[in-house]
Image (cartoon, rainbow, N blue to C red):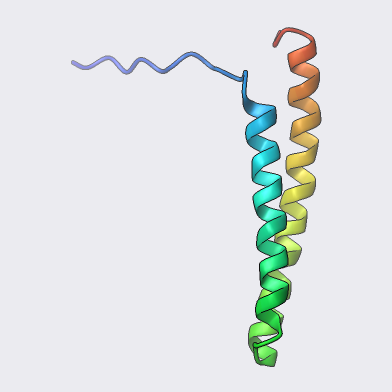
Length: 77
């Protein structure tokens, strides 16, 4: 019988990790705008839809950053 031992929850770098994810997503949006110049209408619509989902993800990540920052201030209780 094997025992699965999970790692302790280390939230110490969550804010920074989320900020990196936001920055990477913003860069992806910017790169997609460049790609749209060379895309046909169907590809452009796909890119625009994907960018809308990216914007929603960014908003969610920013909310999570706020929550993680508050948790950090409160000692992760």
